[in-house]
Length: 150
Image (cartoon, rainbow, N blue to C red; front, side, top):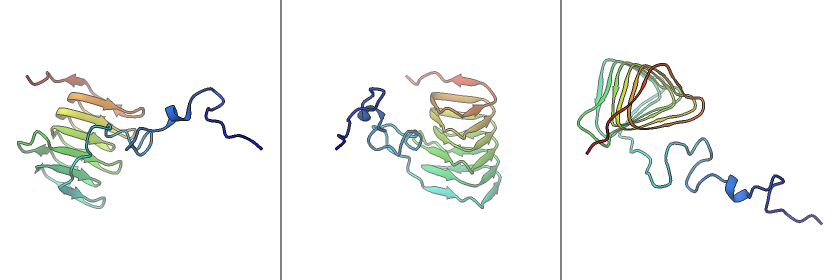
């Protein structure tokens, strides 16, 4: 009896409202564009873990817990730090790529890319090559763009 309409009442095609292929939706797919790969995770710090002291890593580090100290990637231009909504860091961060949905109390130095999700909170300055912020992310500090590498 009723025909299924291909357009919404406002005249917008359903195709235009769909999330891009490969994404998990408008918010869940914010981390990576169609062309980029998700970061490789070599190290995982769980939700119940609390680390006191500095951490140096290579590859990928995913944080669900808490770190009191600095986080640094050792000579790794492709290193990635991802911090979930439950993760937090009290100290400086010096990693090429940072994907943040949790809290950082300290400066972030990301020579390549910083992605701030809707629950991200930064109390410090953010030094970045490229930055992507989602509505809801908060920064209490300065945003400083780093000069591109030649």
